[in-house]
Length: 198
Length: 198
DNA sequence: GCGTAAAACGGAGGCAGTGTCCGGTCAACT
DNA sequence: AGTTGACCGGACACTGCCTCCGTTTTACGC
Image 1 (cartoon, each protein chain N blue to C red):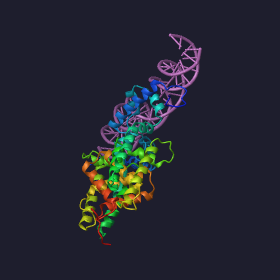
Image 2 (image 1 turned 180 degrees about the vertical axis):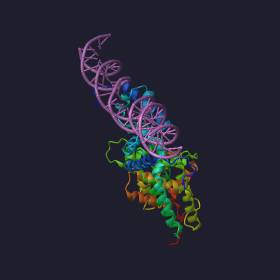
Image 3 (image 1 turned 90 degrees about the vertical axis):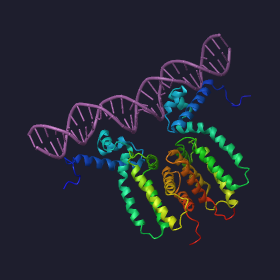
Image 4 (image 1 turned 180 degrees about the horizontal axis):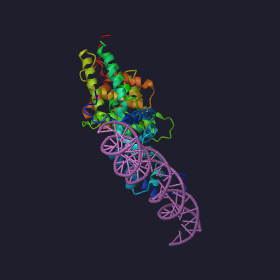
């Protein structure tokens, strides 16, 4: 019956309780203050000591990845909605928007994500979701290219970078939504094949 | 004869000496460690106390702006080289590259620059150079549009944002020069008028 | 129930960086 | 040389990061 398999002992209840409290407090702080929020404050709000926080999540990235888990699942679910679309071009567009929202979950999130994209070592817990996003983008780009809607010279990684950039700019809070829309349009007209159809 | 005008006293020599030492040390540290470098270390390397540093430059941005002064002048000089170009399209392209290099002077520089672009209050010493760059970009864009080389829907601010983004990505160190080139190409084909000439 | 051992807790504390304050100092003027 | 005021610089208070270790809590076997 045990789901965990070869565990000799049942996991302690306070472990799960503290972990949940930490995740909730962290999400609140990350939402309000961005990913640079004080971990000390998170621990205090969760009602635990700093040591407990660092035992559960050895690095800020580990905590971040755990908090992001929910959003990652939402993104995967969203792929299922996008996939059935016949229009590969529209699918790519929607995927890019979904990624952008994901990156914009917390202010400052693009920074550690790019750092994770740089490292090949999987010691960074953000590398896994990051690689997933890049791979998915490549698939959408390929489909759009096959449909003749995207230039052959464009790589999925390029659009990943462009999307992270938009989220970064959004996160700085220095621009209104109108400028962001123009920037997205600029990127889109950058990767689209100049097809005369439609 | 006094250049400074109504100054009763001649400025002390140690003031200028300390200021110069601070600027030099700051440049070294910013180059090596990015704009987040320890100001304590800068002061120590300049051979002055922390108090002296903060009296000369009350905030990190003030120090940054002062260190950037030289580069700003270089950029203005570069405009003089670009201006005589007959080709407005090539002028815009070169200007964007010049800006990108300016933004990439120190790792992490895009962040405070965008923060400065957000504030209308001129209390931030980076606001002035930032506004200059945006205005200059708008002029280049206008010229390119008049020549029929850039889309009418593109604003100078958009290309400013796009260029800052590229610098930011470059600063993260997560990408090779090849990807950056493709990203620049993507932006360029995003703002260019799809003219059949050439 | 109760003893036990392993696991987890949490706070004290070392470390680094920021920014301020104030007594001492040094250069410019008389 | 003496005076004066601007300037210097280190001590200090504060915040946040992260670790170590004595204490507590929990699950398990009896």
